[in-house]
Image (cartoon, rainbow, N blue to C red; front, side, top):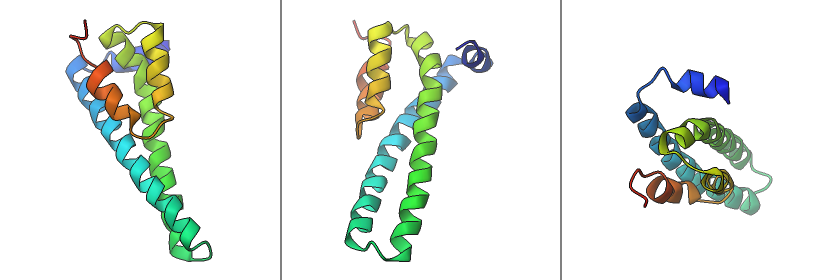
Length: 112
């Protein structure tokens, strides 16, 4: 945790928040493309294009998922989340499009 705090302390909070919002959106969009890839691979399991597509989209989705998890400690500190909010944001990464909800509802300064 100290490593992430030290790394993100170099950047202004506004920039980290902007990056987090973009990552939340990109992670949700990559869920959609991953779903299309899973559908296509079920329709044409022997084709080369569906295999290449699902491999590529899966890697991209994994990248955004990892970025989301890396940014969570910094965002927790910025928004002063308690443990319950942090665990909820962590679990939201495993559900389709839930990161958009985290961005819109939980990642706000005026939640009270």
